[in-house]
Length: 236
Image (cartoon, rainbow, N blue to C red):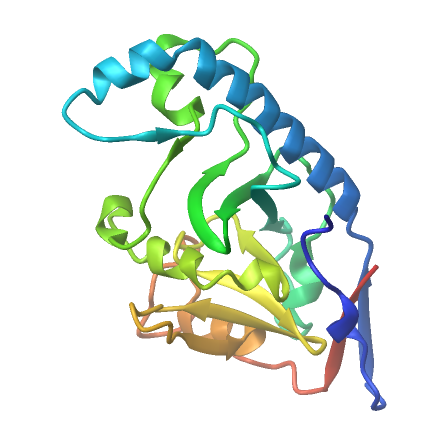
């Protein structure tokens, strides 16, 4: 099952600046599914150690890999700003993002009956240590309480945006901020609520208001929005 739809990315109007990137969706999907297969085997192998660690809590482990029937995996790539981001603020921010495919820089969500039950980044299976037991094991979780992340990422992931839009994270941004492509325009999504509401701001405006080197809120923005032309962001 392909994990996103790109049907809504096509535009019917004339756009001054069309920005195109080639994203290898199949590559991301293949790598992350293989990663989950390996981690499912790891979880089964270490089942006793995990249950001993959680002896006072009830936990559910993903030991039987039924990804095409019971469970659905989705992928959210992680991109980075180019090194010359500060050199020219007159261009669209999208021209300053490195959209190169890096299959080992991605997050995944696992759904069961349309309910998210697990999230993680890609975990390299080479040279795992005893300290990777919890991070690498597929311990299904409840997303009702975002405090377990120390932020609002739990509420953000419950939105399931990557099942509706092309969705990506940015290196260095808060982990409860994500970016989506909606009808050819890229938006930042943040401040999710338990009721499913959130802030949605076009990416150039987002950077002009909220960005500094660590993506920390800044009352005196470092960047000024100078890109005024319409654009259409297209992936293929």
